[in-house]
Length: 155
Image (cartoon, rainbow, N blue to C red):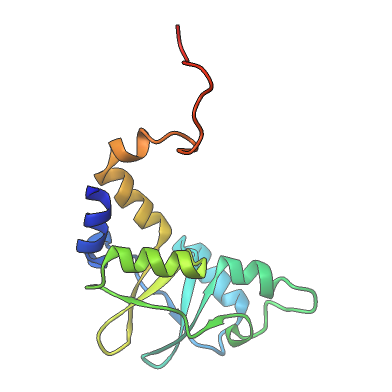
């Protein structure tokens, strides 16, 4: 199938990952939420100097930051996901899809060869790529490919 081949051949750079919004581990959750809202993004990368140490996502906000006893004044280090999986610009889209599927992630940090964050790849970018480049494959799929009608439909 052409879609599977393209996902293995095309690089993450083709998807034009969004910018990396970086914050420090001691910055507050409230600051991170405000920055995410201003940037209209679903995550911020948590860095100590040039080194990526974590990611804080909308899911972290809902599961950890808004938990009873938590405060938006708490540092990001308390609610972030530490040591996130990453991809590089020259990794295949297939690699990114596999990591997202295995981990249940909607965002992957994109790092350069030395591990410094350079962007963020969202599942939304991947979906847009697939729909844009393979519309007939996507639009012609039945809701459940394993279910067949009992009798012919139509007139």
